[in-house]
Image 1: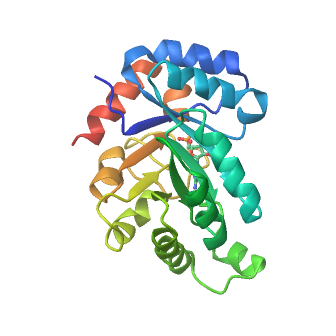
Image 2 (image 1 turned 30 degrees about the vertical axis):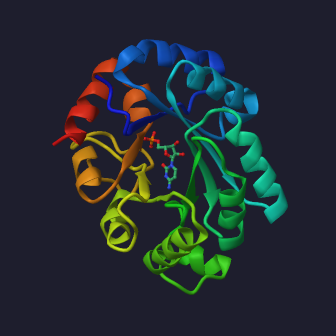
Length: 226
Ligand code: C5P
């Protein structure tokens, strides 16, 4: 019944609230993303608990450190039983994660954070447009041998054109037509994201803040299949 390609972002203030949300969603959702808000509060252990229940678990650590540390961190995270882990898409970081990965864990590169606009990139010292930088890093992700990238749904088609068929493209920034977009700027509907070449989508607040999270998740899963 649940579509495993839909990851619900558990961006909630406590593990207790995340556990309640998972219980409310029941069999309507089988895949969950745990990010920086919950990871310091026992999110990793909670991920282990969900994995033991047969759920798909995405640990959004966004690792970025020296090779040896990234490799060892990825090895530690592999032992949890999670499916997805993010690292920043720098060649050395991605290669180290590819070396540390084992078991069912797949590694995704975070190309360019969608909160960075062209001016922010110039301020950091990059002299490329966001799109040029995304595609450059996607090529480096393929070369590094990691499993996929996180991208805006609006870039998924351009990425799909230059990667192997089994390369994962995971897109946040997904909203149903007419829905409150919140702070997301570059958005697409679930079906548009999938049709552009996404392999998975990540949706948080439209589900976790809904009056009926289960109905919201089911509506998104139905829309994805269109
Ligand atoms: O609530 P919402 O659907 O906007 O949540 C999207 C999730 O995806 C959040 O966990 C957010 O941190 C994450 N994300 C994002 N944009 C990126 C990378 C990650 O929205 N570029």
